[in-house]
Amino acid sequence: MKKLIYTGLAMLMAFALVTCDYTPSALGEIQEGVEYTNVVYSKDGQSLTLYLDEGVPVTDADRALNKDMALSGHNFFEAVFMGNNGTNVIARISWSRGESAAVRGIHRAGTAGVTYASVDPAAVTTTAGAAILFVGRRSDKTLLAVGRLSGVDGGPLAAITPTTKSVTFTIAALKAGALPEASGHVAQAASSFITDNGDIGTVAAASTTMNTQILSATSFPMYILNPASGTTVNGSYTILTTETAAGTPDLQMSAILSSIISGGAPVAEPVFPLFYESGVLKEVAEGLAKGIEITPTAGATTNVVEFEFELTAGEIGINSFYFERPVIALIDAPSSADPIIEPVKWVMRPGFGVNLTYLDNGTYSFGGAILLGIGADEFDPVVIDKTFP
Image (cartoon, rainbow, N blue to C red):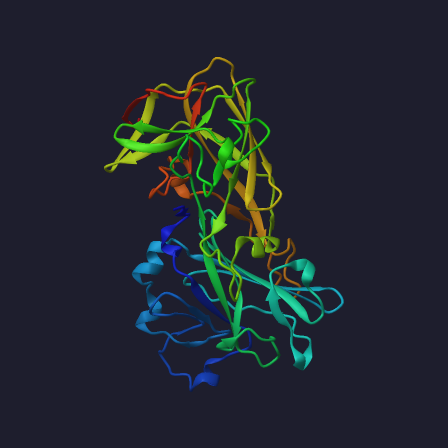
């Protein structure tokens, strides 16, 4: 099973976003000494409600995150709505957990309203809009989950009108990762990373050459770069979502790709293999292959990154690499109305923080780096405890 980019987002979560002016006086008389908030977290961690202006009185439950929410690592959000009144009308809001949030300028087309059922900017008309929610980390803007509109005013999906008070997004976490080898030393069909090592020119699970590498006492899926001829191997890495079956809303990655647009060229870096074992950081001291050049390119869709690995003839050893793909939610344009809010520059990556550079063990680790075996099929590297100056 593929790992989530962060396991705390395994559950589907609903986010309620209030879209009309809402003041404490509309909810009851303002009381002196009472703190108000426009962000209310549900006790089960599966929803949050945003009230405009001063909102509702803060309760103890609103002051702290529960365990599930804290473990998930997500603390930053961006919601984007795109309508059209003859020209594009964009409303966007981004906020961190603990901050207030109020979305302004959603196009509603008079009393009839606009239904924001789509996630495709190309499908926007004067009566049909598109909306998307991104969820991730504030510190490095790692994208952890994506969502689409699933309800209005506590009910099913409907048009957003001038009287609409709230909308609900349903989201799914992103998932990615290497998987242990399949029978015949090839990749499993569900593996995020595949190559053409066994059939140059055909990047596929069946063309991927793999082995299981033991480093210290830990097993890792290893992707072999040792073509029968030449020094070039190609590969690709695909990021998916936890929700694969079509439903309402449809959270298949294929359905929401149109709302995840490129924010720049992908980058990839080789990194000497690092991993944790029994709480100790380990590194490979001998048996490294250092002569490898990695050229990443954007795939046909934004959740795919393609790679060209150029090897040094005669060099044998192991190495690893990670990548990052900048993306933007829905449209690369600021909000149409004041205050002008620029799009967030998010990044799709197979891990975050230092975990990005640690090895993916194919099962339960948070590591994002892919282990490569270069110039041979079997290796006997020397592993030591990592020391720091």
